[in-house]
Image 1 (cartoon, one colour):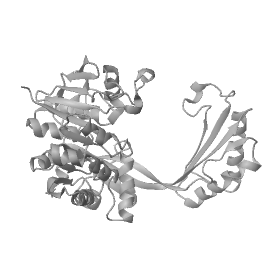
Image 2 (cartoon, rainbow, N blue to C red; image 1 turned 135 degrees about the vertical axis):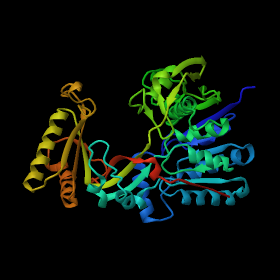
Image 3 (tube, rainbow, N blue to C red; image 1 turned 90 degrees about the horizontal axis):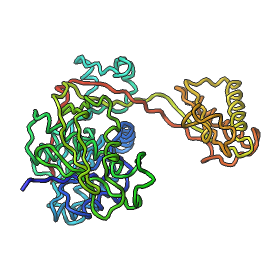
Image 4 (cartoon, one colour; image 1 turned 180 degrees about the vertical axis):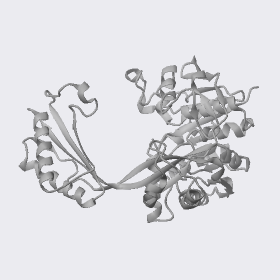
Length: 453
């Protein structure tokens, strides 16, 4: 009988449906539960949390997710792979082991911890060794903003996760691994795929790419068929039923809502795809132009034919740095002449700020309801029954942004008429965290794996 390994997606981002992990392990047979928590901005948020409290810096929702699936781990052998460790995988592991002890399952939970992606403590060492960590978009060397760097994490691949699974871990926690590695690693471990078996590794990457956004491939956020997606309130999250030859079927549990179809899977495939012939990961370059999709039955799509080639010698590094201050204020204007009122309020606000000597790197106005999403393509918006005036500013000078904050509220009474909503009172001044993508030689990144129980 052909061996089938079932990897279920239970989270597509930090903040996804809390019920999904439990539903995935209780709804039918699965071997692995993949939970994806991290995005570029998430890393900087977690780093700030860790600065405030050294016990923090990981996705705390993960602890609740593990609690909800603990019986499946302890009694049925379901394994969990997650990048919930953020910038503090060891603290995340501490929390999971404490939970297991509290629930009387300490001996049944073995936590594999993957570290080494966090380059922040090594930045000066790397720069001194000649790694410029230049911005991939501008070519500017990292030295230009070194003193403002908040976090720096290399996207690691599936190899250390495979090592953790081989070491007996049934819960694997990583920091900034690639999203696709969370699915790829179980398949490499189960099928014994070699590190240079490019076509099969590419298949694992494609399976991971389809699963990484949760229900986005099973009916959620579906542009093509959204009117006819059944029972979204009960949407089923996707499962990859994988085989050793690299082919797999995307499915969901019977009795759940949503839909898995060629169009829904295709929409997820083109998400963040880039060059379709060169989907680059630390493990392999996958050629998306070779992917073949077939509707195998209701809510079942077979994926096969995938080709891959050798990976590059680099890892991508996600760097976040402090880039000044911002604030966003909103006012809602009602019919009649809603857009005209909002436009006048914007002019008044800008004139007052100018007279105060306020200068900003950026001041951006949007008229939500008239033109914010589609701009000129939306028409002139003159007949909009209500318009939200949304004004945002950014500056390296916090005091300038604070002046802007004080000038929004007065418009309610001393500006144009018919303000119907002043959302949340005065806007909040927030620090800007900017993104700096870079590359680093793989040989400079040293991952480590420990298995704890």
